[in-house]
Length: 136
Image (cartoon, rainbow, N blue to C red):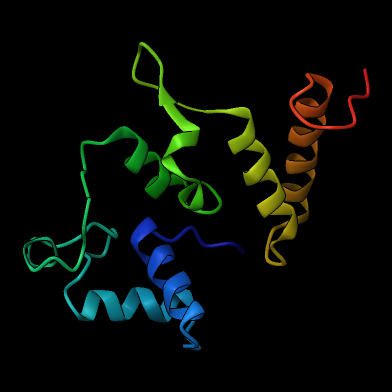
């Protein structure tokens, strides 16, 4: 079972892992709550924002909300891959979709269904000429 953790937990987990810490995402989530960095929904606390522990957080930013709501692999995509349409819907460009699809396929904890969907996305991007190996 894949648990979708909030964006701040995912970012903290990645940073801690890169620094050599051996914690699970569940442990990071619990410790962030205990430290009053996030609430149980993963939103930063007023204290965390005031103290500067969480930077550039804007709950009204649709792209940031999308990244938090959908988690991996979208929370790791650079904001340059996102845009909003006229109705305020969050859209991802083709290179961003390709990066997300590859990340899903490379992640050992991805479900077989998620991997299959990622493969389908890559195939469609290839057919439309966004990736090499056009199979038209």
